[in-house]
Picture 1 (cartoon, helix red, strand yellow):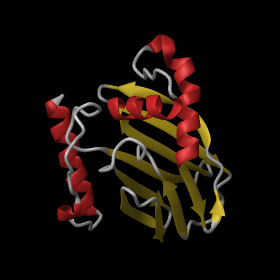
Picture 2: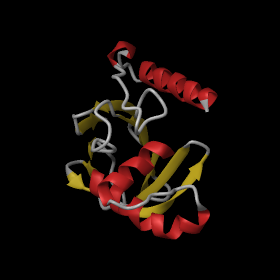
Picture 3: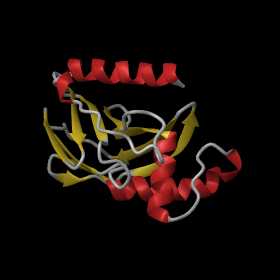
Picture 4: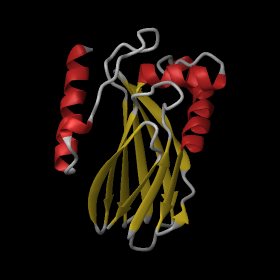
Length: 183
């Protein structure tokens, strides 16, 4: 697990430098050992405009242990994203959480995100969403995101957005919830 965490941290720093973000601005605060096994808390949300399919594809990546801790705290029930036998019951929990903690607006208009599902791979859980009928050129993307803020005061939510008009990245440091990207 240490190798995966080190790789993820390296990728985080690399993506920030590619996005022009200040690497020194990522601050790691003391960790509550009762809920954390790694020294930082981060999610990565990738948004991709697929002009051919006329969709907006969204992928959210969470550390599984952090996500399970937050789901348990928010919904006051056991959360196990790894056990295949519980996948169906976890599907509704994951959908409910992500839909209530992530909102997108394209060119000033709200986007209806359809939940496609989640999968768990090693230490990460990937959640997939999609918006249909995205037919206009994206000039602005606004996001409101509060992923894992209930659990971690040092939470960082990173966004990578790819549209027909270019690529941009940004990050939200707890407690900031809103970003706007102009293309």
